[in-house]
Amino acid sequence: MSTFPDAAKPRLAAKARLKWDEIRQKPLLLFPEEVLVLNPTAYEVLALCDGRRTIGEILQSLKKKFNNDAVDGDVRDLLARLAGKGLLVIGD
Picture 1 (cartoon, rainbow, N blue to C red):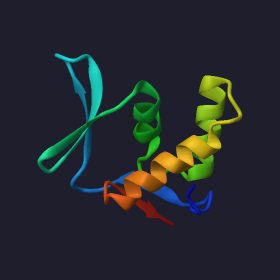
Picture 2 (picture 1 turned 120 degrees about the horizontal axis):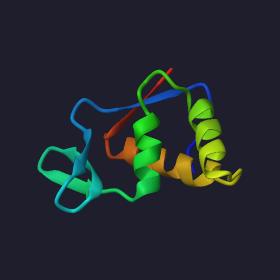
Picture 3 (picture 1 turned 120 degrees about the vertical axis):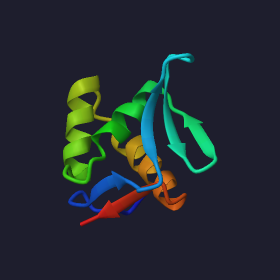
Picture 4 (picture 1 turned 90 degrees about the vertical axis):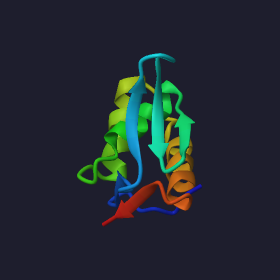
């Protein structure tokens, strides 16, 4: 689980980008010489990581959208794993 503060503002790293794959009909996270096929929830999380929204705002948005107050742990884990791979930048 991440220790990123709620006020931190995550964004995709310059080397990473989100893309919709028309052939597979799935969202992708592209980065040099690799690709991650995302599930719809992971895509929703990353689409909110624009460097303007805080982690707290992202969590609130997802809780409201999915009508689920238990998203914190999963979202923070996803952010931590992607930040650890250098695919997400966590700014202040």
